[in-house]
Image (cartoon, rainbow, N blue to C red; front, top):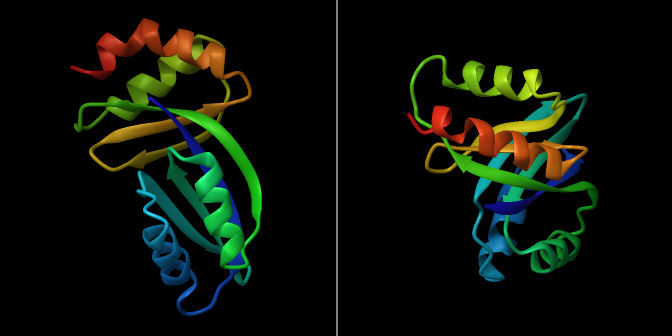
Length: 132
């Protein structure tokens, strides 16, 4: 599946995630995945959704700014030790340099790189491995 990863940098204040999540809910946007990391007084959110336009509008509505937006693939992987290493090694061996990787809801792996077409081709070649 294709989705969009939005990188959003906001001040590290109480309620910054709640503000964003509430607005996404009001806009009926499902959060497919999320990562939040504090760094140097700011919080960096990676937000995964499937509705690019509505998500951009919701982020802007709460006064946040998207610093990067990237189309990514989201694929199911088995949940057991070593699977991430197996998948990412095969992608690396296929010449893929990942720029984004994190787990989303339902044990789905979010992957992004500079060439989405190359990533999709490499994924198809290893998909059988990732689903075991």
